[in-house]
Length: 154
Image (tube, rainbow, N blue to C red):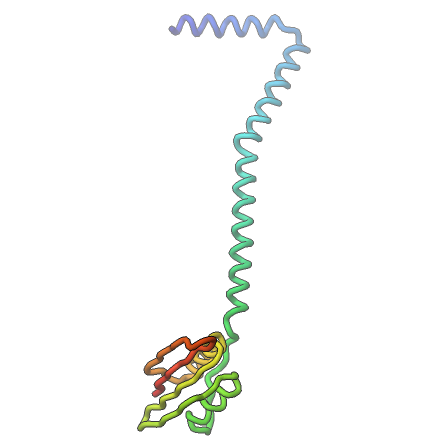
């Protein structure tokens, strides 16, 4: 086996030496070109394709983050007011375009029944919580095209 390898190697060296300088130079150039093409096909091109996919995914994630940022309401500092809580909630619900159907005060609890467009109602509830109002219970019910909320606030 080792002998066969040596004889094949020797034959290759002799064949190379028999070639003219110009032929050796051309074969070396051709070998370099083939190696370059192989390196491009097997290494560079797949790497660039993976990079392109990663860049597309990154841009997609950035777009999703921007959309999420736009859908979240801007931060508002908690409201400190001299008005009673019932009056503040009534005014803010009316300003938001919600219909205040019922309001009952019982000791330190305030019971509200509101209705309106779902997005508007949910945004209003979120804003009320951010303003420091503690929701003790919340019941949501869909009625026709509107959302009705029964809220108990402490």
